[in-house]
Image (cartoon, rainbow, N blue to C red):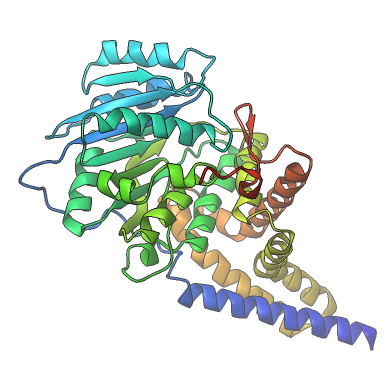
Length: 397
């Protein structure tokens, strides 16, 4: 009798997982599709001026692979670059000047704002300084891009044309992250897959939707929209700054677009699991607004959606519970099918798709570790700085 009840419970749980996957497949903005690329665009008669702002902290290792791509932008209008050295100790600023002298191209200014005051993350303090320098040039657009992002020569041209054609205040591309090591193959495509599941790209570009997100590595921002939304002052303490920026712009009446990139790439290597673990765990609990309730719900949701299907298949096969095995197998099949497009986008072997439950279990542990680190006073730590939760930061009014 106990065994029958146990098998029945597993079958019902597997059925719940299957129902969740059918809903995700059909009702979550077709998040699994990877065909959301730069929208249709036409070149403007007069190209607007653009200032590129690059916050950089200890980026000497990646700068030779990224900065020359910005210097070499084939942009018909006026454009220049402001690299803000955020307290680097590895010669980032000097290397940037040396690269500019060697490569030529767009004008480059390197400056440093000093240490951020209380209530500011280092990156946003650097962005604020860069935007302040840029405003002296009165640009129509700002390109906020990370120091580890390499752009194709026509990247800026296409971003501006898309913004002008579609009337978008933010045009952001999710840079293609590096995938070379074994752990990068397991973790990186899933990272973008999970992000798209939370923030379906198709919904972001639609008017009237509440879904708002951007990808911080590549954000073209209308300067007027930035002033209207008080960027970055309004989001000065945000650890997940790209999503906070998009919400601020949307809340001030701006229009957003976000999609996958074809020729914008991250050159930052994260070959070991510990590197990827740190990348995710530093902000996972902040994404949950430092809430134990949301953490518990997230853990339960990840377990139901990603871990139950293979467990149900195994338990159903072992106990002869065909309902549990069938529901688990169907849920696993739908999960695998939704992951295949992302693996194709990243040019990875398709046999990785059925292993998504294993990767999801890693993300579950990373999320729990993020909360543990927070309560031990080591949460939201990055490059030598640890940030408090927003409600612990004094408001500047």
